[in-house]
Length: 164
Image (tube, one colour):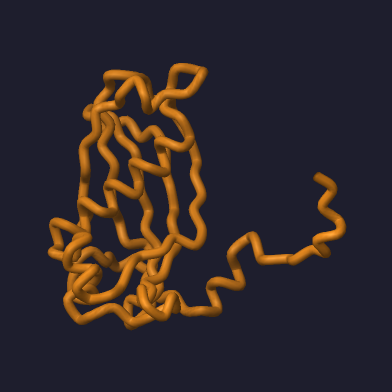
């Protein structure tokens, strides 16, 4: 199953080039995910009751066609990857015009965290069931090992190197 969420592009969503700003793509994906979660009864109120929250660890985009002010854009929410216990997930979002023109794609990898411990956790069965409804035969099984495949990793520096 695929979830779709519709947006009307506002003037404040644009950048200096008068097309949808990169930051707006991030916001649209986040809002589409939250609309999906609310529809599946795991919105902000329920997440607070469970004491968990979704955290995006890596997000990347490819852009194919510009999106302008006053256009309608439809953003999909697809589950591209998920661990067996749903603690790790990867969403794919595709941006379409109402005519079905594919304008951009985003991939977002994240985890559920325990809001008190601030550590990765397994979500409640209700979340696992909702996520399972949106898996497809192409959905891959993810594990912590997949984090090592992400393109960026932390590299601390000596604070003395920072010349501000």
